Figure 1 (cartoon, rainbow, N blue to C red):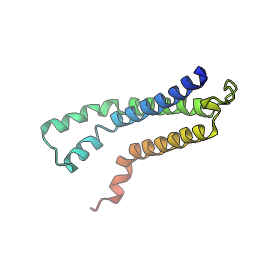
Figure 2: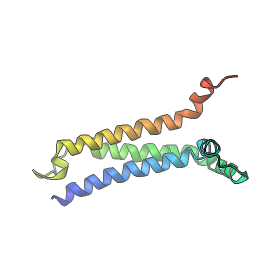
Figure 3: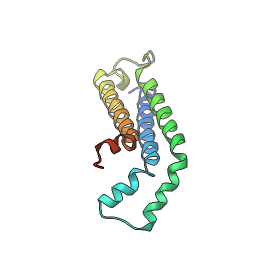
Figure 4: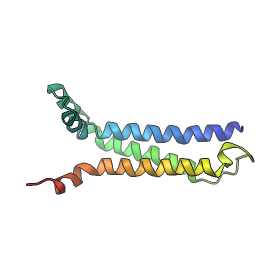
Length: 123
């Protein structure tokens, strides 16, 4: 197997994982306490998650930078792929693209949830 192809696949996966992790950190201030309360876990320490609120714009920006980098790696022309390598396999590339778009949609919904949720709550 081609080492370049394996490294590119790992870079794309690492970008998707890092983007998902920064998205979770960005939403920790808002969704974290809500999820903990819904799970029955509470306490005064849950309010300390609001300390992430000032960092939220930076974390959102970092998430989209990492996801953009992963998308660039995924959709750029693969001239360096050797025949029979993993990156030349269309099924593997399709699976990575499905994972990329799934993560991008879920992350975007996660970021939009605090703005959309008030429309669904009863007054």
